[in-house]
Length: 80
Image (tube, rainbow, N blue to C red; front, side, top):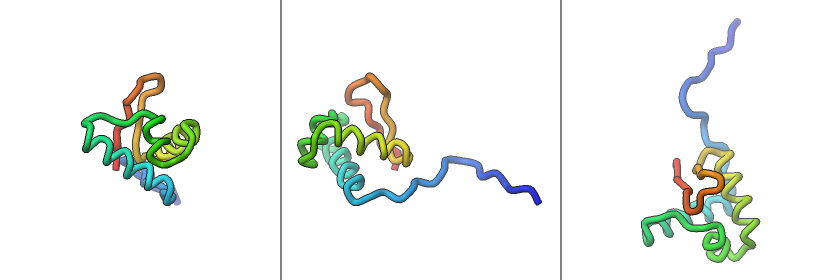
């Protein structure tokens, strides 16, 4: 029996508590400044290093919660 192929965007995988905090920071920053935050600003809000903030955002991208363009600052776009 053939397997049916699902159409549309894949479901978002489970988001961790820390990743949810990062999403909340990004949403709040956008609401206040009408632009996305830098990795440094996300890091400061979460009290983590900038590389840790970048990793969180990359993981959220893999889980299809947001997207951003490599090499373009302040290009985070929320998908959820």
